[in-house]
Image (cartoon, rainbow, N blue to C red; front, top):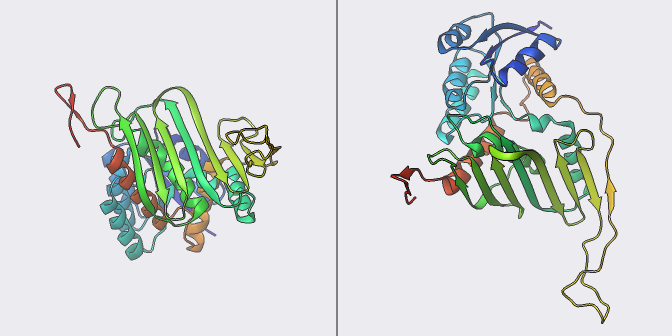
Length: 325
């Protein structure tokens, strides 16, 4: 089959990784890059470009993705896909009318450890998952157009959608704060109720003294932890029966009987998630298949982000005092 000709729009902090991969992957060639609005428009008008990667600031995603689809290009757009549901629905219509592939860069959905976790969940290893606890902390960089929640919780919500399938949020509560005031949060914490009965707590911060990317999964038959910063043992399972109150007369009912636990660390030969993501995009363009993180997935994650953030967003400061929401 013919080699797909790519352009990367935005080759900064993260876009440079796409440039590297597209120079290495078989079946793809990097034909152009763009760093300015004028260069982007020139790239989109080129008939020799088959697909574009959009790795620009989030506020530009909707317009660039729409223009790319209108010009007949397949689109891989970095997260967050867009910042409003209105823009997500607009892209959904353009995907349908253009018959082109649009995929969102939620790379954790192409992570071999997360894929293995999903397989184990389908086998019933954890039983029914009742809660998810996620921490995504780091010390900058600070984006000027989105806060920590939209920048990082996108990953955790994408993982939840990937693992548990389409479901709805029934309630969301939490708070967010901007360290120096303003409307963009530096720290956010929320608890979300889903229609499948699961509870998820997400803590995100771009102003933290330690980098953390970790998720816990609590089920009726066991526990799992995914720690992306662990060098090798990123995924572990703890298999034990839920501890029951002690039946011995001398023990108080306030104490639990110690329960033996078996920790299992599966051997997983993992590749680079971003490489898997680009390979999947290329395969979908060639076959016409819907991507794992296609437009419908992007719609759900955007809807969740918007719903939650409306309930936790920090109000801007007014003369040193917090405005009421």
